Length: 298
Image (cartoon, rainbow, N blue to C red):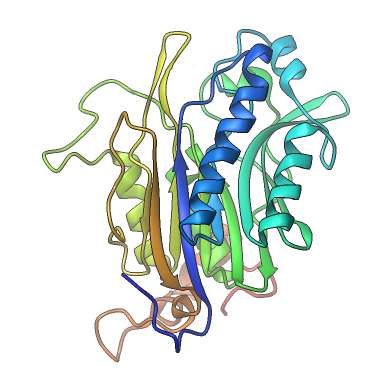
């Protein structure tokens, strides 16, 4: 897919799938490998780049002390400095995941950098399995960040299993959600006959029912007995993947050329149905708390 010259907000998205490894001895190589792949994406025209969850640290910590040792304070630390410099020097937007230390608390966090510096910060709200032993659940809600290329939301991995997350961001006018992941190998069946995993379908569904793009970057490889299942993808406003869904085991970059402004006007299948307008807010908004944000449709 290519975007015509008349596009209001033309963007080339790149989601990066690679294999960061836990351990302080791997920290420098994790960072440099992610940036090298991001450089390749820039050379191929990308201007919105998404790295996986905990892209600089690896995932499978052995102890809370080890998780602390890997963490950085927001706006400090070599990874955030390198990501900020990369975004500024290449005039691109970069989303990346890191372990954040705030006082005595640890968060599984994501940051969004642009040419102007840090534009967004999110702390993972829904913690998976042993993450609950290291991290505190996020306390920042589900913000959407205004940028020159569009409105961008961030979510992390297990968040996609909770439809409220993408719906709340859609209600704030998100054009795209950057989904940073460490989707793990779970008991079978992992893949259907088409070779797609459940996380891919959840990503596609969230994009479709909220009429926005989702760029999902996952990691691959094995780490301390755990395995990660790849399958990174970019879902369009209709839910279907734009281009390929990544292999379960190969390092790669998945691209999509889109007009982010299409998320604000793309219809469903006919002129009488409109997803935000058709919502029965009178029946369920009060119970679900969706009226809290002033930009939520009424």
